[in-house]
Length: 103
Image (tube, rainbow, N blue to C red; front, side, top):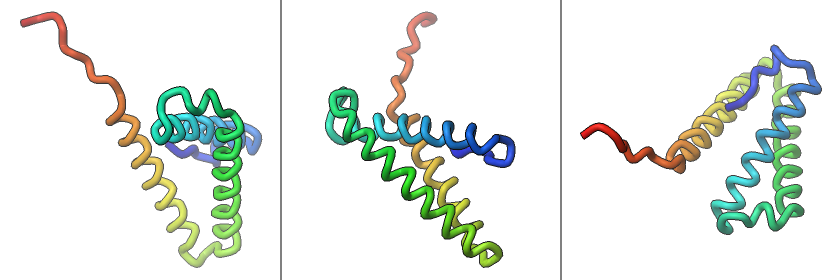
């Protein structure tokens, strides 16, 4: 889920995005290369986080330059869609309870 930047200081926002990028890096790297791969390859995790930050910076710069053109709204919608897709993907991977107990 993306953050509401209006309710946070710039430092809090930066830390929160970094935390989200770290979680995404570990989840994606382990999904692609197998469990534990992210932990065994911190340089790969760092590169993933750096790429996320660079992409976010480019999106934010484009949105600032195109203020009023509708691009800002398009970027926000795209980011919300990506967050929803990631949340759905993570929910699908969550372990299911087996319903032990009452019969």
